[in-house]
Length: 116
Image 1 (cartoon, rainbow, N blue to C red):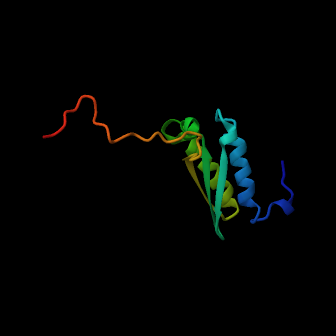
Image 2 (image 1 turned 45 degrees about the vertical axis):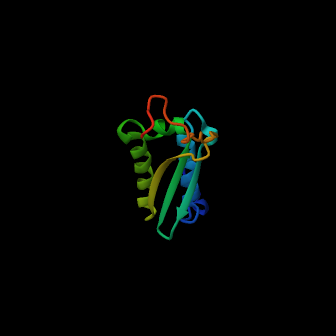
Image 3 (image 1 turned 90 degrees about the horizontal axis):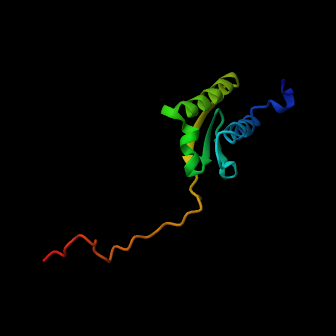
């Protein structure tokens, strides 16, 4: 599949790579709806922050980081051809839908005795 030259501009590269990342990773995770990518683009480099659900983090990283390394390799190969450095950070989605349970520090532990 050949991409028309009008769509192959350096300005569109980060956006297209973001779409590629989502397309690949959504096939790996159980919760593709929580998947999103933020980009930080400079003149010759782009950092992609890939946010996934907490339960899917291990699936995206893979055993010994192999899956994440493969995603980075794909980005690097495409970026080197366009003379554009690309980095990938895989992060846990901060908006996981869980509320923080605040522990009550006022009560002593059941097994501990008060100090005299």
